[in-house]
Length: 235
Figure 1: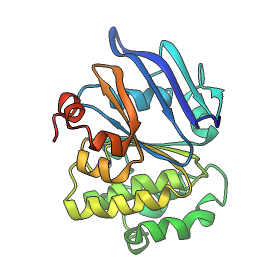
Figure 2 (figure 1 turned 120 degrees about the vertical axis):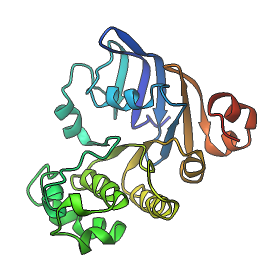
Figure 3 (figure 1 turned 135 degrees about the horizontal axis):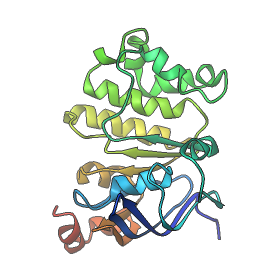
Figure 4 (figure 1 turned 90 degrees about the vertical axis):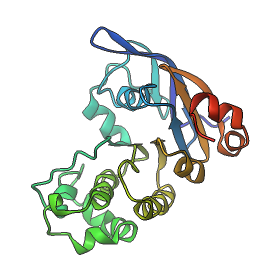
């Protein structure tokens, strides 16, 4: 049996005195697009932050390519080959597009090696390469946020709510780009837009009230309207 690229086993994560995750488990096969679903406040973002050790779990285990991430600092996790696109993008608006990409280099020459692939995915970034990132549209800023994690050779990408606040035409462009980038990296995606998630992902995991409640192949979820209604409130 092939070991998944990412395995999360029964993690419990606290923010201050509040327990946010109370038993999240998930498995992400290499080469897949897997989506993490759930209502607002279910614990999806905290799950990604737990994987990155930004909010380390108190209990449970996270393994990347078979290696435990316990007691590792976020920069250690990133150096292993995990890229994180946080909610609300977190780009440096006063820096140019080029500078935002350059500071994402893990080794000298990373950007030069990946520039053609990035510009193929996101042509607007080439057009506005020397423009301050704060001058970009919301959709272009999201493209830049994703492009930054493509600069180093990351094998797993964690992307949090890429469609949030974007127009439908921009969402379609992002979907096409994520499909293309998935040819080079495994993707774990948090997405509130079920239509986008259902068209994009191979697999799904549903979190409810800090616990994993369902997981499987996306076509099976699409066919299960009762499960969708119970945990996502969408039909």
